[in-house]
Image 1 (spheres, helix red, strand yellow):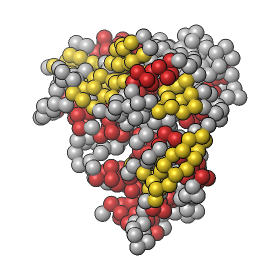
Image 2 (image 1 turned 30 degrees about the vertical axis):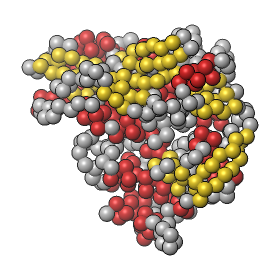
Image 3 (image 1 turned 90 degrees about the vertical axis):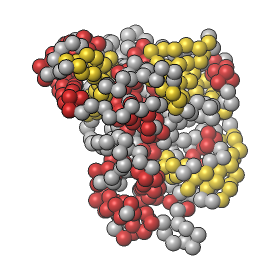
Image 4 (image 1 turned 45 degrees about the vertical axis):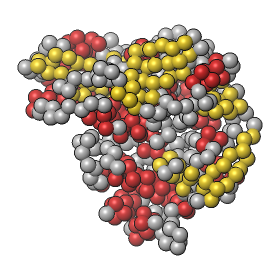
Amino acid sequence: MDADITLTVDGQVRQVRVDTRTTLLDALRDRMGVTAPKKGCDHGQCGSCTVLLNGRRATTCLALAVAHDGAEITTAEGLADGDGAPHPVQRAFLDHDAFQCGYCTPGQICSAVGMLDEARAGHPSAVTTDLVGPVELTDAEIRERMSGNLCRCGAYVNIVAAIQEAAR
Amino acid sequence: MNPFEYRRATDVAEAVAAVAERPDAVFLGGGTNLVDHLKLGVTRPGRLVDITRLPLDRVEPLPGGGVRVGANVRNSDLAAEPVIRSRYPVLAQALLSGASGQLRNLATTGGNLLQRTRCVYFQDITTPCNKRMPGSGCAALDGYTRHHAVLGASPQCVAVHPSDMAVALAALDAVVRTHGPAGQRAIPLVEFHRLPGAQPERDTVLDHGELITAVDLPAVPATRRSAYRKVRDRASYAFALVSVAAEVELRDGEISQARIAFGGLAHKPWRAQRAEQVLRGAPATAATFQRAAEAELVGAQPLADNAFKVPLARNTLVSVLTELTELTGATEPTQEDTP
């Protein structure tokens, strides 16, 4: 069964017809040609399909496109500013060599951008001792907050360093 | 994936009717478990009724000091809510220990309660499973049982409930509010999930078409301390082998009140009433905590690969209670928060 939906993707308003079974990830990649979010596990376990959905990081492989009609989506591709200069998190990933094959990187970057916003808003994590105090982004905090993004190349050390720099 | 009809509900009554009128209709929340099951073929509904745009997304104070959490409040938002962080730390910690940041931004309060077991045999449609296909058998009984139940299981099913949030809610004496074809009701969280018995296909006491609208948290005295501890195979982003939600109040070195629930041990969040009985009125000592844990776990029936869960649960409970009672002894509450 088909449904007509509207999505704003990286600033562009786009209309698309999808089968109701289509995930947001498949709608973006296969129906709209937006290939920054990657299909890794397709079961919500690896984080490579992470985008900013209405400003918050979210996996797109377990979201039905039809349920997100009207949503505003920012992919890693849409993070750069108007002049095409990389987003500070993208710049930090480059500077710190925070990837090897790069497949998980668009998801890592979107997740990092969303995570930094959460930390700035004072949201605690599972390793935060003082639930009501300000958040100090230690390496342990970054590792916990980024645990939904797997990197099979094992670039974690540099990913943590990149996020540390972007947080400053 | 089988084709299905998608409907977006605009009010609660319409949502309930749209599911109640069709045996193969289900509610869609954040979708983080349901959409996975659609892909795996674990469930094949003919209609999805999307409830995420219903106005059930608020955290509100209740008269008397409790808090009402709307069914659509996202797990991340609930964990970040100031009143939850200050008054219900056990709940904030449980929420934050579940899934990942990007999944918690999608997952809802109601959906978290209704997520299904991560038993690998339940999720693998090539194996027998009484929960997925009643009467087909249980592949776990002769399979790998590291993650399975040690309390309250049945010959039909040894699966465990995967939620962290629900374990904290069990310790908090939360109440689930529902709206169904037969009207509204309030179900204590500890009675909301079922033990498998002869009907492992039923995870909860909900009727078909009955919608969770909210979860109510009772008021907590300012002297109460609570915490959630989760033990798992890796440091983050994994389901519990064992978890403990505990709330205690101390008076003159004695435990005046204790509420304990275990996760990872049973088909439902396991409220540890035998342990609580030992704790109430007893001195807050390691020996008391040991006796309490043993009173609860004496009836455990481990499977081939999970005997470790019994000492792990005991040690985790003792450790959490030690930490909580030391904290309670050392510091008095400094602020009185109201929701």
